[in-house]
Length: 210
Image (cartoon, rainbow, N blue to C red; front, side, top):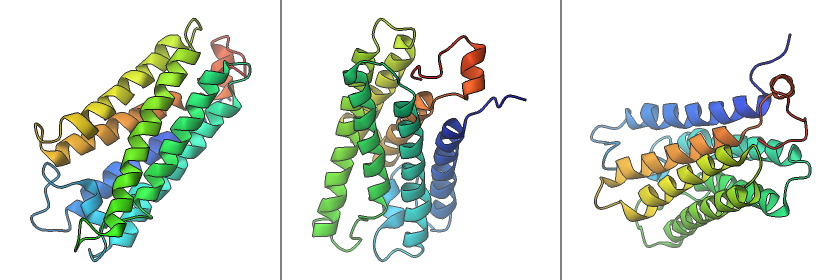
């Protein structure tokens, strides 16, 4: 019996679910915490109860699962153009940066402290590597049967850029950030390769990307 869901796709789905459940569950522990107004990283800031558990479950583990899903795609890309393969590697850097959010938490007592600046730098690396990687993937897959899916990934990357960088202030920062993260998770799910059985059923080569 052929599997309909590949291990990389399952990893990407679990990553998104784990993040969402962690944010909702840990946020519910604190009176006054608002998913509309407060950034996700506030739940993992130094000095906050259960910060370590939150950082592991919301950032580190989902980030590493995303790395696994993206590297599975990279291994299946076969003779894809170099720029497409480079794009997946850039998106992998973004996934590693996402995991690093949990290893470089905000300083709850000083948002200008070195720890907070390191977290902010990682945030910048995350969205820059994601948007750049998605753009390279779309360019590299143009003219192939995977082009539309690759450009969908880029569209979600643009949504991440919009909500992470441009809309905060117009949209409540907590909501804007969560939409940015959701777009990243959807893009990662789109990148996760299907099972080889499912790919073969569609007439795909095992070495085809996406």
